[in-house]
Length: 222
Image (tube, helix red, strand yellow):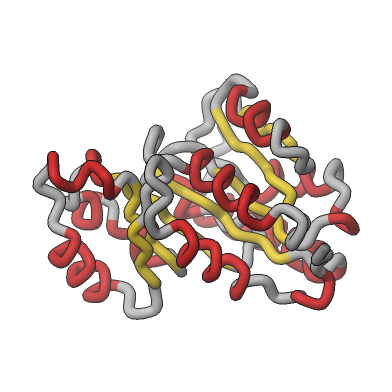
């Protein structure tokens, strides 16, 4: 009986992720992997980002989900190339899935690729995809204790977005305490406080996204 070893699986995934990254580099495409639990606002933040960069940065999107194309349909209505990956039960995207998606996206016409990972605060952190940056979204209603329960993703993130801050008056979410805890395990991560409902903080977030683009000379600015 064959026994799969997790270390070997992750090693094989990392090799394919390196190929994905090399492919994206060869096409001058920057890539951000967006992770969070279900309902924290990944799709909403991606939509707000697209709307503010429309005509300035050519964006493509990979939508990861267990099933359905609901989010991909919303993104496609913004007029950007989008490709849906349904994992059929897997709780994360892996490099093989993303590699197949890259083969079916017009990379020469994309400056920034946003990957919406499957909603989960555990597995996505273990699988590299070939991205340049990892972003983690935590919404206020989820509570400020998730950093203690799921530390890996917070440790890996280049940026952490606290979403739905319009709900802060109705919760016990401690922004200062959470920020201090994050800096305790991850000095590099930038923190953004946003609301996709009121649009507070969105401009600062979008400015960070633009600064993360490695090939600004490729951008199409009208």
